[in-house]
Image 1 (cartoon, rainbow, N blue to C red):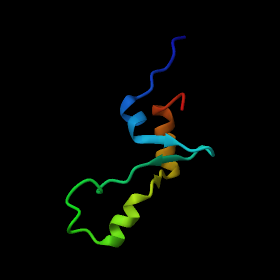
Image 2: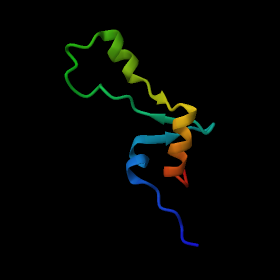
Image 3: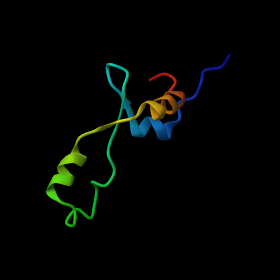
Length: 65
């Protein structure tokens, strides 16, 4: 049986943690920052964790990660 291919779009967006959770970079932090509050920008700095439903979908896209 041939090897499964990793979905490259998902590989660029998600990273697996040591405990198996999947992290992603939050959107909205690249431009048009002047109208966003400091508190909002600070919260956007931290990586987000996918919900359990999304984790199942992401694992199918990233078979070897």
